[in-house]
Length: 213
Image 1: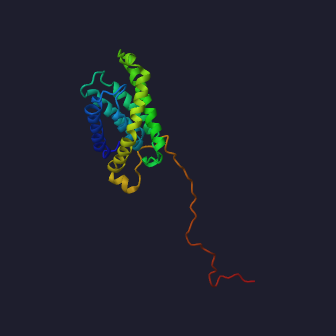
Image 2: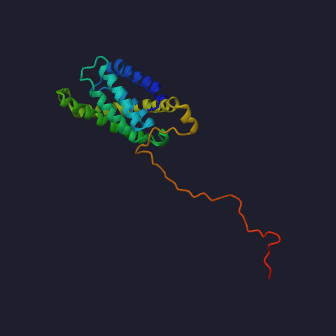
Image 3: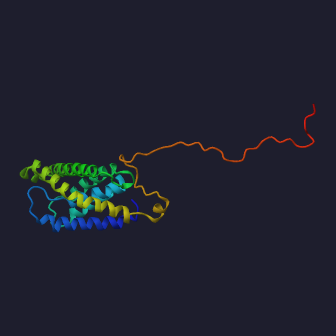
């Protein structure tokens, strides 16, 4: 991950965490809580690629694990967001520019469902049975609904900030601003044969050495 991307990622993660804990966490909505951090991780992963998305997801999840009022095992959410960031980075569009809103919403929907199921699965492994009492089906549906409603307002802004402020001056000047090839980026290989444009040399007869009949 390039050094220029660390400050913008840190700022976006902190803003997402503050909104999730102090605003959306206090709304007492039915079912799951809107996951702003997941949207931030998905947006940055779709710009930075799988490796950058993995690092951003792990950092965001670990910060959420340590921030109060966290009531689960440390590292649980970090594992979930790390995997979600890697998976979303694999679907990164070419040059990190999303041309279709529907494809971005599909990525968010898949991440919302997968992260909720994975979080409940990891919780079951460590003895957390809260998902059973609330109802896993209700959690998945509510998480999907909330994240899809917030995605058009969060993901494009995150991707724009990641593209604009996460560039290295050297790579931006050379035009190589790729964050590692993902499955969503088709690598095009082309073999070209350059035609020689140099002067053509013809045989010239040297005076005095002409052939005699």
